[in-house]
Amino acid sequence: MVFELIRLQFLKSIRSTSFAKSVLIAVFLGFLALLLLSYVFLAGLFLGKIIEQIAPGKDPVEVVCSGLVFFFLLEFMYRYFLQNLPVIELESLLHLPIGKKRIIHMLLIRSFISPLSIIALLLFLPFGIQVILPLQGISALVFWIGTIVMISWSLHWFMLWFKQRFEDSLIGVLIVFALLLLGGGSTYLGWFNLGEIVSPLFTLAQESFIPLAVALIVCLTGYFLAFNYYYKNAYLEDLSKEEEAKFVNQDFGFFSRFGLAGEMANLEWKLIIRHKKSRSFLMLSAFFLLYGMIFYDNPQYHSEGGGFNFIFIFVGVFITGIFMIQYGQLFLSWNSSNFDFFINRRAGIEALVRGKYLLLISISLLCFLLSVPYVYFGWKFLLIHLATWLFNAGVMIHLIIYLALWKPKPMDLNKGAMFNYEGVGAAQFLMIIPMMVAPYAVYLPFALLINEYAGLAALATLGVIGILGFKKLSQININRVLSNRYEISSSFRQEL
Image 1: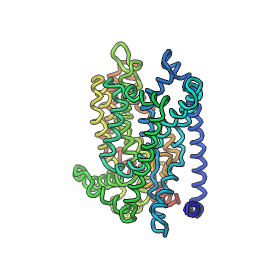
Image 2: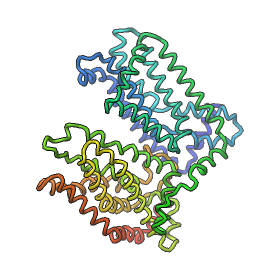
Image 3: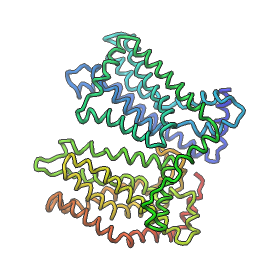
Image 4: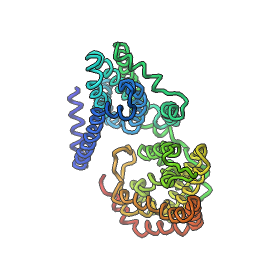
């Protein structure tokens, strides 16, 4: 039966109308995965020397044991964004006369065959062979590396359950943020060092079989937790209705004040929260709000005279405009499946574009408000975020949309965002150049001739002028869509 299921999956792949494109994408992603895994392996080979440079005089094994908990927190994060769920395959197999338990076992095992499953092994096994094996012997190495690998695999099974259970709810977002805050934030802010608390477990793993046994039990428990959840919920009607029930009436009454454009903004918001790829962009935007933690509290970016580093302008533009940048670069590609609907409606194109403008500016404003706590590091950061938000809302949004309208491409909204290049063309790769140059073209002349705050005032002033002239500036992009609407519609009919 296992070979029969494998045969069915193989036939499904080769009979696809986009088989050749899928093969090319698979080859490219395979090469990329091998490249990244080779970097991980090289990092494992030189991990001991890296620790000697970072923490001279300290025992490398102790340093690694105290840092393992942060590796697992990082693994939790990248698994949350990269790890795929076997739901689509499940829907295509449930109607066949095959035992449901066999199908779920096969899909769970198939999901385990992934480059993510060997990252921990590639990173820590070379270090263990170089450092632990000569000093403590083979048993200590096996117990230690076995504990690490079992915990890593436990995260795989737990993530299958977690994403299926909480990915589309606010609870899942809060859990991920809480882990990030309690794990990395507690050590960064000096509340408590989670690494030192968990370190004795991995130190004991070098001497005893008990941590490995516990990790093995946790791994098996995670597998059966995922299996039981999928088995109890693996019904076609549940899989199809669950998405519909979660997002009923999820709109903003605020948008209704803006007429037809507001209604389009509400529809666009529903599109975002109902589809996997757009939800991923929204989640990434929330995580990137923490980007300032890397720079704002770092002494090397602060001058003695109370000024600030030029890089803070980029950080401010990035934090307050991250959703605008990510979502806006695929401006019309999000509507590739229903673009013809707007062409055949009076003022449909204009309402669609203005609705997107309204949504992008609103979420950008929300990002600015959520970034206000950065004032903890100094009032100048609030001024930076205010000036960069005004510049984003008045200038950058028009620039992003103008570039995004250059030969937009179709895409499938139900696919994940990671390693998915549907909708991406040359414009998206070239877009980064004017986005990086534009803020500094305004800021630097005033900052160099007068001071940094004059540069911020220039950014804010130009942003306000852009906001006041919003109707005329947005009409430029509306006219571009209207003049090219049939060419855009034809490109959206291309086979993915």
